[in-house]
Image 1 (cartoon, protein in one colour):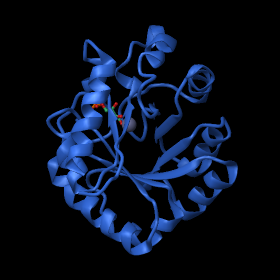
Image 2: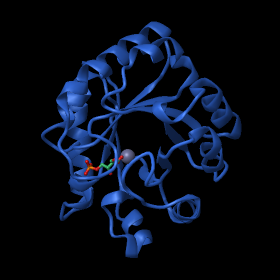
Image 3: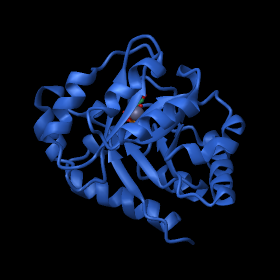
Length: 222
Ligand code: DX5
Ligand code: ZN
């Protein structure tokens, strides 16, 4: 179909936290490293905060895609952008002013990305898309790796892709949750071009083969 390139971003949530530098170096052939920040409030799980993100940023050979699953994003998200990361994703459900926050992130110098939980409708955001560099459509309930892909989120991707084309913007459409060889083509066909994969990459014996396999499967579906 189109020539859209597929970006693969493994999630270090599925990595060995005791060897994080080695684990990040193992995915050097990917397009970015997905870093899941959880606060035990917005989601019922706790990972790490800005110090850890700064450490990963220091050693990573590839750009950082930070996914904030935290409450009060208006207060905390700019601090992550200030670390110099490539992209910061905040949740639509955790901000009182998504446009102001996205503008602030861009001003600091990172890409601005907004995430939608499975129960959050996409329609209120379609007119605002030029304010964002990326929209993340969650294909699981945020909080944990290893859950099953929700194929019923695909209409959101189709609506976003159509709206981005109407706006004439290069909006990245990211999916996160349950992305593996048997699900990635479905998401790509619906309009996703940026794919987070935790367990399907870190659970593989050869990570480069897993990353390349996902990229090929997604590209063929575009
Ligand atoms: C879930 C996280 C995901 C998670 C994906 O809340 O946002 O990034 O790491 O893990 P898999 O790919 O195993 O579903
Ligand atoms: Zn994530």
